Length: 118
Image (cartoon, rainbow, N blue to C red; front, side):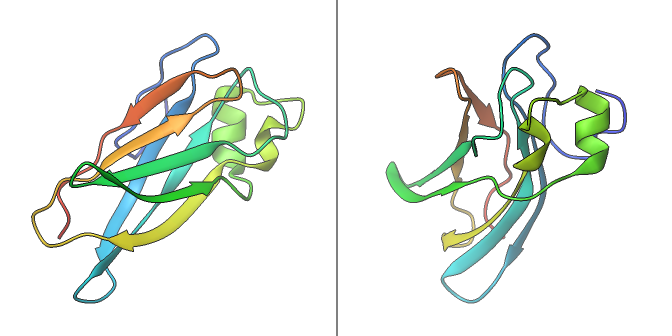
């Protein structure tokens, strides 16, 4: 996808498109991640983001907020441009590998590539 500076992948069609833009350590126990998740076939409904660490659900959140650059690049319409950004903290020890999954409004899902926790 042109202009994508994250670790996401554009799948085309109506699949969700994600990008993880940053991971940073908040304290000894938690990290923060931020990025975007968009469903070109969706509407204004927030998309769900699930993060698993050590095989257990660490956090579930939803997209909230606009990203005009993403909305333009993906030609988002029908309100899909309204809920694109995500930022969330979760417990993750240094070196642990989180598994992040974005869920689209039509029950599609996509794994969001993420590095090990710093």
